[in-house]
Length: 611
View 1: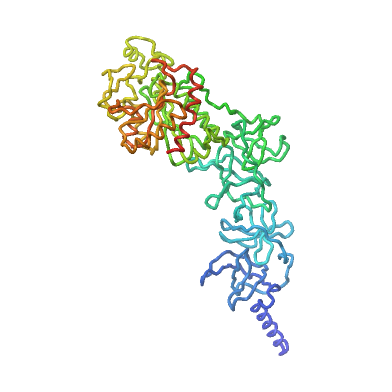
View 2: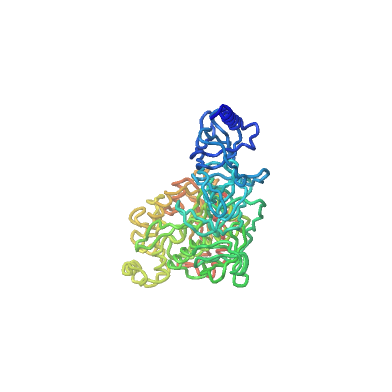
């Protein structure tokens, strides 16, 4: 090699050094190529944190030369650093790989896991880099499966399922970017898939949850949509309001719902069987429903059950234990996010004692009925309350100017509709319908007419079983009888034990025990003067609604009743309400029910708002 060639070689090396170590002079024209797999870092304080790895032999656009050790490059929204020793000069620059200036950026997103990033050469997909979790990017565009981003000046693509978007504040609209995204219901901490939202459809989010989910209205449930697979939209949508509806419909099979009344129109969502939706009206063969603020159409042939504003419960009948069981099951089926059912104990003969929670509020009040067997019309009343309130909640209706939805979101109402299922069955169906037929015939002196029976199946009056001045209860016959026998001791009967234990497990602010005959309200039981003044104001409110008379406080009232125990045990207001005119020793005729309903329909709602 002659001296001229030596000088020329030295000059080229020197100029290369100047170019690659002083790229900040003209950064937009500075390019390098990775000589090997190259880690990329961001600077956090004085520390360098790895945010990705670039593949070998890939061309990069350099932003600047930081010092003798690092170049800076753009990785999404990060100014990142690569070691100069990991790169080399570009032999032949391919400008088609790079983003031109002026590309419009849209929404920001971030990687939710370590994820590969690709580029395309013709139809061939090649891996450009691996990006670490939480690295932010701006979306430049998209195709079926990928979002377009910037990696070191390159046009790059990341899988849609590897990112979440940063949704703008107060923007509650989103669009499905992949073929479908699931909707989940949180069932006691377990996620259960209840449907799918379809690609390209836009929906309205009620809120975000835990940074990972959008919360939507999905029929009678609160649905959770993962942020993976959805994106913000450039134009906000106006959600279809939850207008008053006519039906509740239950989906009987997995089915798509559509944009119009045709199965050839675009699918809005897929609904899993068992889900319940409010339907505004029936249009041809399709129910008009709303999913997360979007109108959709559900084929009539996919519905296996429906209810209208008349409800599930028919209170104008002799309402049996078996009918109550069927209605409880159906109510919970139609209102799964609103109603919870619990078996709190069993009767002497093993029948379930059901407690039904209505609402989602942390505050709780309690209503019970049918302590006394012949007073089973109170079960009709309580079950009709549960049915009516549930439909009103779903339809955002009011009762006596009280918002049912607001009330039940703030206060949960617990109901025990039938405290004494054995006794009720005996009165309604006779001694052959119970297991202890010989015993009840003996207690009833051989008489086969049990219409006057108040007690449980062992002849114990359950409303004289509570430990509230139990020793001084009056008129005790001293032996099992159709009424008034207080039992050998407080809580000797499993029904009273169940009520006691259930009450002690809660923090009820007030209670109502419904009984059937007299149109009066008991409200006082050994309160202090201050408590009595408080409770009297509530009693006046109930009297004004029902037009029932208030029983005057007595110096030595007979105790043992559930309300009596509640008042002295918890020092909180409790009420025993007798709902019908006095009809003697027998069940209240059904003809009185419309009047009973009109006088009592909003009592629990009133108390929930008053205490």
